[in-house]
Length: 76
Image (cartoon, rainbow, N blue to C red; front, side, top):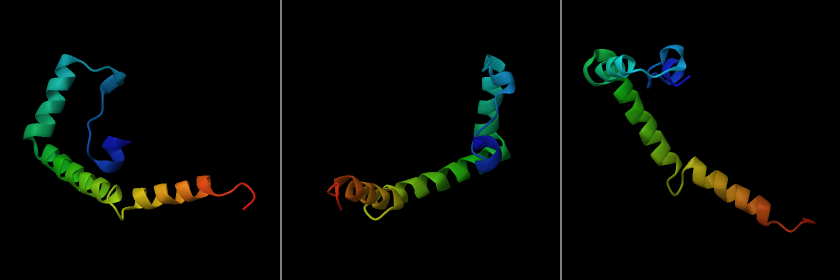
């Protein structure tokens, strides 16, 4: 999902991490053009996440809404 949809990760062949697979992944991420795009995409997601958890971000607003719901009297 992360690799295909968000373009910020690498896939693991067969679900097992090997030394050679790890070295290829690091080479891709650190030195190849695709890795540069992955790092740029990761920075964008980081900025979105920081905005979401900020004082007026969506996460904070949703958390406040949850607190309001949980704090309401039972018969309200």
